Image (cartoon, rainbow, N blue to C red):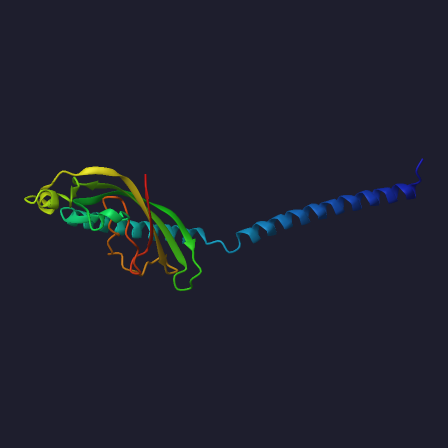
Length: 211
């Protein structure tokens, strides 16, 4: 049977144990809180994200409308589409009209760049259908001397869908999400063989793909 002194010591040890366990638990919770705060530190405020999302949609909408207007304006122009990579057909190709029917866009992402002047990068993908008139081969001018393939192409008015394609553009913007470049820049011209042109320094970076 324990003495009164031994029972007192046992009681104090039990209390101390509970206190120690409580301190460990509190420290663990505080550590978790600090871990969460550390993880969230440096992330943009939700209001800033919402503001940049709004700017991105405004930019994409304006660019989308410009693309549509530009394509409508030039859809009846005949272009010569040369055959590239064919050594025995150098200088040959087809005449045709073509235009892109833009049907929508998506905001793919908003990134932070390494630039102080343009720290925000907006990634937008545009979707369109590519339509062309029948290809009029340039060889017709040699095979049939009384037939000009360009004049034949100019008289064509029926367009055939050549498939759906998408184009991704990347816009470097200032800290408020404003793009300072020139949005009134036509897209690189496609050829009848879907050989996309090169980007220029005046145009935002882009990537083409077909579906």
